[in-house]
Length: 317
Ligand code: SAM
Ligand code: SF4
Image 1 (cartoon, rainbow, N blue to C red):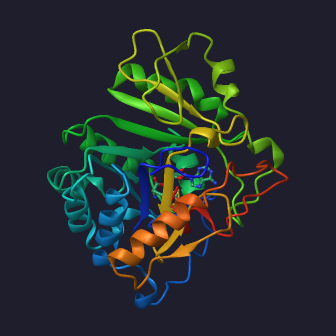
Image 2 (spheres, protein in one colour; image 1 turned 180 degrees about the vertical axis):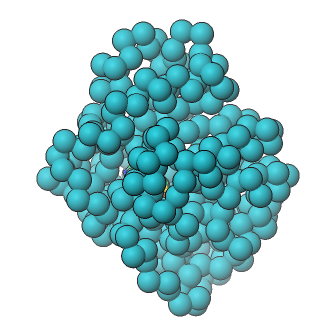
């Protein structure tokens, strides 16, 4: 379905939980989040009903995210049922990878075609620092398992943080030469109360080009990243720049939070509840939310924080 600015909304991102087994400093507070009452959260049946309603309006692609989606007890079932909905062509997951060693095979068999795995550093101490409680070893084991499990293309998501991992841009990019992996560098977004990063942490993606003069422009894959490739590389390098060069004009997404709220825009406060609605009710609210999608997310930089009113784990990045 087209929104009021003629953008074709065909991509639904579904956050299945706001809980996580890590505590990344840019994403959620150290103490985690207060676990919500069960009846405040969207159920598996409601998620599938929302997917059916969205598919009937032209949504073809789903991304399952969180919080950490793989800690959700019924994640395989959600993916299997969502992938089977008529009109859905692609189900992808964004994960920190830690639980992939036990789940990758089942997720692939359930119809998940692609994985994005978050990896901000190749240094074990820095990984422990940024995630507050994870290990690099755990994330790498997840990536290795995923590579052997038959997913179409695996992307690594790296949040660019000035003074933390800008010195690792060449090493992270080198992974695309060594493995059939794509790397996506994402500008750090100033969310509600996630992290007290200074101005210098908000690096523009042009820092990647500055560090890698040998990058050659590559053809777009239809996503929001500007794509490049290192000579002889197996995978691409993508730059996602919501701050320095926003892509709102071609945004095709709508989001569903784990407490059942539709968010037409990641950084806008507007939310529309789907909780407790039947499929006609959900279809109608989806149409309302799509038509209410703003033209752009507004100023977003170190001084102008996101107006979402939630941290990233509570929306689904
Ligand atoms: N737990 C999963 C993971 O880490 O991949 C999925 C949820 S996480 C919220 C989704 C993506 O959002 C991750 O790649 C994460 O690095 C990114 N993210 C979280 N907070 C962010 C922020 N403030 N700015 C930019 N990206 C952020
Ligand atoms: Fe958890 Fe992902 Fe947020 Fe890290 S980025 S705290 S892994 S939800």
